[in-house]
Image (cartoon, rainbow, N blue to C red):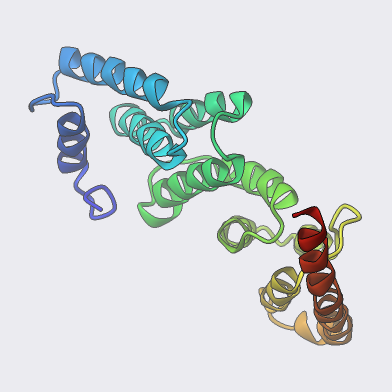
Amino acid sequence: MEWLDGGDEQALNVILSSVRMEAPATGITILRTKRSLDDMIASTELSPQWKEYEAWVKLRALLDLLTSQDPTAALAIFDEPLKKGSCPKESLTTAALVLLYFHGVILKRPTPPSILRERAGTAVEMYQSNSIILGIFLEAEKGQGIWGRVRTTLGSNAGRIKDVARRAEEIWMAGWQQGRWQSEVERTRNGLAAAVEHERYDFPRLRLDEKLMS
């Protein structure tokens, strides 16, 4: 919250306090803080309370961003646990995108637009029903004049059946660019009807399977 309010120094002091370091944020203090945060990440990596682990990763990434103003350095902090698979990947992927979005779009700090576009494009292919990722993807495509990329993402699902949430999101996507919705109305209506029918049929069957297994 301090960071989003433009208070970089206040945000830095909060991070120092999280590992019992005291301001001011000198070079040595920052190095010790990074080491302490790394220790906290390592100690909570296998914890069943994975949100605590994710919180330390986010603090560590924000510290790198505040001290270097380099988004690639912060993203590297997220990439390591994503490779290990030590935390639910969707949540950590979303957190990395949100950090990048806040830095480049909300705070308007210097950020190559391609970084957000590429990472958001990859993430939306993996987690197509995640509305946060989808919203950042659409924001990243603004001004690029590439409706085809959004249209392709809207239509693809890697062979999987689209759920109701995904179909509802397609209505949002179709309205992203003025004048595109009319051509999507019938396709979206049919797809939403199919998704509702599939979930209506599949849910009782799932409950029956659970009873048989128990």
